[in-house]
Length: 179
Image (tube, rainbow, N blue to C red; front, top):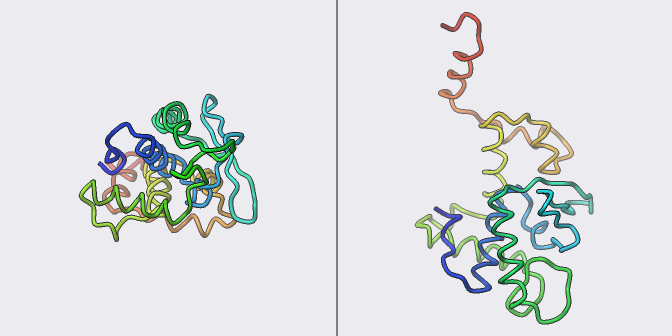
């Protein structure tokens, strides 16, 4: 519901839709998404290069749906926002890089549009959902650690809270004497 809340075809709505999909589909930090450049987009290959904390670069896969939204923005939205030549991917209405503050405002705006309490949703919430959903669907913690750019596995382990129903289902499925 949240990802589909940007409705319309204006340049800013196309940008916002691509922003939200990119945040959720990559688990990138808000600053990493704001700092994305065209030269670090590898949409045909299905990944982005993000520059994280300490200027460390990492490769992050991006989903097919997010790629579609990103390409639509690049084709139809970004040219209308570009006021001068720049390599920055996500542009503000003045043609400059989207700020972290603006990104927060975009998330809050579409949370309200989706009927979600705005205090419950932040850019980091999408990062958290990315990691949690990967782990819930069987991704190994080391891969998630690498995608998030965490130095320590302990930082990634906060996303491993698993409900009792899932644990029971895993036990029933894999334990030889569970039946």
